[in-house]
Image: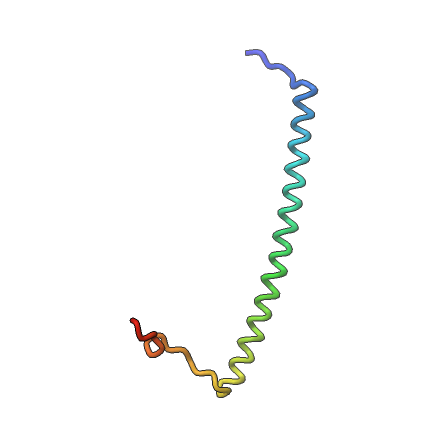
Length: 74
């Protein structure tokens, strides 16, 4: 079994691929961080909406009843 050392071109190709993978990983990390911020913002908005709904229970918003509010074609 003979082992050959990698050629200069092989090393350059591996370095290029590694650089591409590192760049892809960095971009994915940025996307994940942005989505995490968006998710936290949406959760905060949902909390505010829920708080407004609970404080204004008698503000004319009727509870939704699936059976009572069924369309006539069912």
